[in-house]
Length: 368
Ligand code: OSB
Ligand code: MG
Image (cartoon, rainbow, N blue to C red):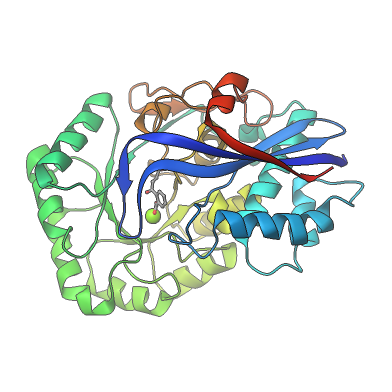
C-alpha cells in the first residue's frame, strides 16, 4: 500500500447542549478529519483534540504543522505503508500522540478496507454490542443537572459520569445519588482540577458509592495519585496520565490507579490502545473506552475497541444524538443501553457527503 494523497478537512459541529468541564466549555466541536488515499483504498480518521491546548498539550493548529512538516515526510515515502509501520517510522518525532493517532488511524482504516476487514475483527473484538454510559458536563444549577441525568436515564444509558471541579463536587454528586438511588452506576471526572491538599474533600466522595474518580490530579503526578489512592476508598481511574502501555505499567506498579480510561487519540492510536488493554488485562485492571465528543467516524472505531474482552466497564461512547443533531455519518442509536459494533470494512461507516459539506470550514491538501 502506498499513500497517494492526504487531505485535512476542518469541521465545526454544533453540540446539542454545551459541554463544560473543569478545563473547557464548548458549544460546538471544532476539529479536523484526515483523509488518506492509497493505491488500495481510502481511509478516514478524526482528530481527537481541540483548537485549544486545554485537555492536553496538543492543539489542532500545532498538530497540522506536526503532520505536514514532521510525520508525513516520514510516512509518505514508505512503499509498504501500514498502520503497524507508522509507530516505528514516526519514532524520531517525540510526543505528539494525537497527531500520530489521527494519521495511524486513517492508514489503519484504509488498510482494513483494502482487506475487507472491520476494525472490530482487526483489533480482536469479542462482542457485537457494548453497554455505554454518558458523560454529563458541569451545569449552572443542581436542578439543571438532575433534569439532564433524568433524561439520559430515560434514554437507557447504563451509567452516568459527572464532570466535577472544586466547588462543583460534593453537592451535585450527593443530589444525583439521592435522586436516582444507590443502584445507579455513578462516577466522576475531574480533568486534573484538584491537588493533594484537597484529599480530605475528595475522601468525602467515598460516601456516595462511586464506581471511580477519574483523573483528580495533574497529568504528570503519578506519585500524587498513588498517595491519594491510599487515602480514598473510591477507585482512582487515570485518563490524561496514561499516554502509553509503559505509563499504564508504571501507574499500576505504583498503585496510582485501579482502573484505566483508554482513549486511542491520547495514546497515539488504536495499536497502542490495544497494548494498554493487554497490559491492564494481565494485571487484572479493568479498562473502558473514553471519548472526545467524536463524530460518527471516531465513534465507530471506538466501538470496535470497546468490544475487546478487557473493556469490562461501560465507555463514554454515547449515541450520536447526545452530541449532534446532524452527524457526518449515519447516526448511532441507543438500543437497551447498548450501541452496536459496526462490522463493515474499516470503521464500517462512511462519511455522508452532504452532511460533511454542511459542517466543513476548509479543506487543505497536506500531501499529494
Ligand atoms: O476527560 O473524558 C474526558 C470530552 C472531551 C475531553 C475530555 C473528556 C471528555 C468527556 C466526554 O468526558 C466523553 C464523550 O462522551 O465523548
Ligand atoms: Mg476524562
